[in-house]
Length: 82
Image (cartoon, rainbow, N blue to C red; front, side, top):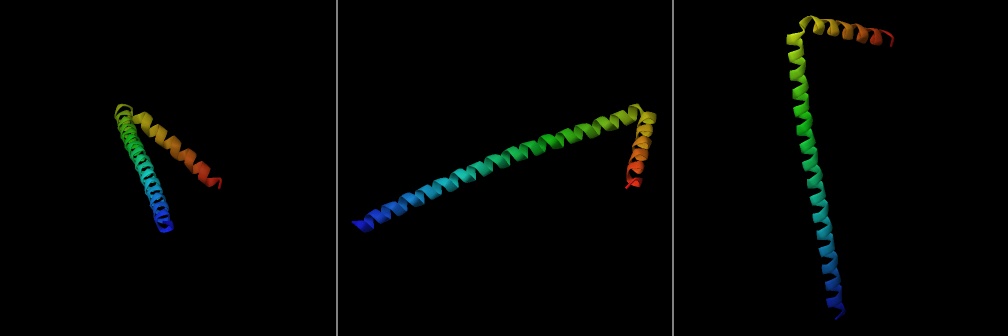
């Protein structure tokens, strides 16, 4: 009788452990799906920004060169002060 109760207790604990592992696996899978979706969104956003930058350079080449020179100058000033 005591052996049977012990076996039932072990079975319940085993089932609880399996349920916990299943819930954890579902949570990890859900998080993985969300991370994957966010990565795809950010990648698409990056592609959009790059394309917008290319279009701006095509439409305003002189302004783009001026901004690049100004950015390079500012960066060199920041690096020189260190």
